Length: 514
Image 1: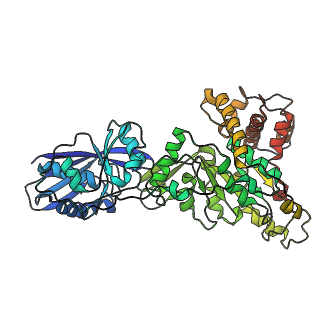
Image 2: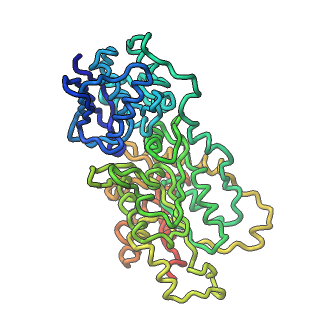
Image 3: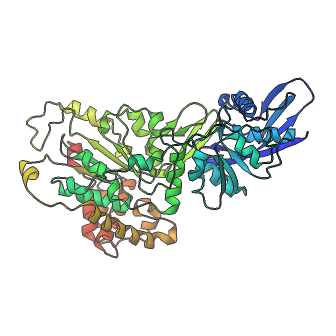
């Protein structure tokens, strides 16, 4: 008997760290000692591993078994270490041959079956980056693991099959009954179906144009209007006019969803921008992320490279809304807990929807509204000034008329709008490539002072608004970002005075100022 050594991966947020698993069998009474900062769920692995090994026909040694997870200072959690610990223990006992640098990622059932685990995609990415391309996973995780370029993936349904592949005595191994492979279809299959089309929107031509601008430049947008004006319908159709995600974005999005507790095993990269629509009673943890131990991603991270829609925005807790201010600027969330800090990407497009007042019956004349001025101020007071200052497009929707509902006008569909959005984004990509940006919403203020500076004539109205304290410095930059998007949609080389004026008008929301 000697020392057994295998490898697994510990995830801290989306960052994976290769963990070396050492096993040593002593000469003392039976015991199972697990070292290296394991959490409660990992400590439970002791009984799972013993039962799985026994039911596979090769029980663990009756002597003292010591397992050490290196680096010892890195907190380890979850059941994904089960298989690596079992293989290290059997190597130490001489029951299987050395696995070299192979990484093992799977949970064990008591009957010896291998169960799929969350976070396989980022774990395999970390293993490949660290020089461990050979990975063993449960059958239910095979398709997800194979999404990582350079990974050499092997999958098994049971411990017995794995032991035979690594040189165990065939006369001892007990193969389990053949069952359907563990795992489920990916979320793409569940999400497949009718995609909402912009052609369904009646009227609201200004809002349709604003949504196209938001999609083309990656801008945040707020829609204020009476009930039934189409705010929710518009927001739900924004993902349909966004381009498919390129490979590097699709890998980021799929990695986040691999960690989610609400998704099944993934079978392909998520190419469509995600859409998250949490209820207004959602807590900060559910939207921002968190939880006990190592924090998990929330709706803001699951909406990465997609849309986060907050309907009835003033009904959300103000602290929840203000917690979005940091990711709106940086595009990521850093969550600190006692067990460590986790970083998740969160570069989403925020869509806020609100009624014009608490009763929702305010219109241009306000004759049917029963709300006092104090109630209106309190209602919109949930939306702090710094949060609103980060919203590029602020639009007041009008109440739909009977003519809007009954006039047979063929509205432009999502496919035609998406084609213009793709062309505008391609223009942005070519222009911004030297500075490492992809679309206008990411452009820093410094570029507008130099290479992307607009003419003095074009910025005259914007400069005047800044001088009159109508805009903050952040607002000034965001107006220029929208102006460049309008120029891209128009096929212009740079924004003119009309583009800048329209971008400035998008920040003037009369309904909120009332």
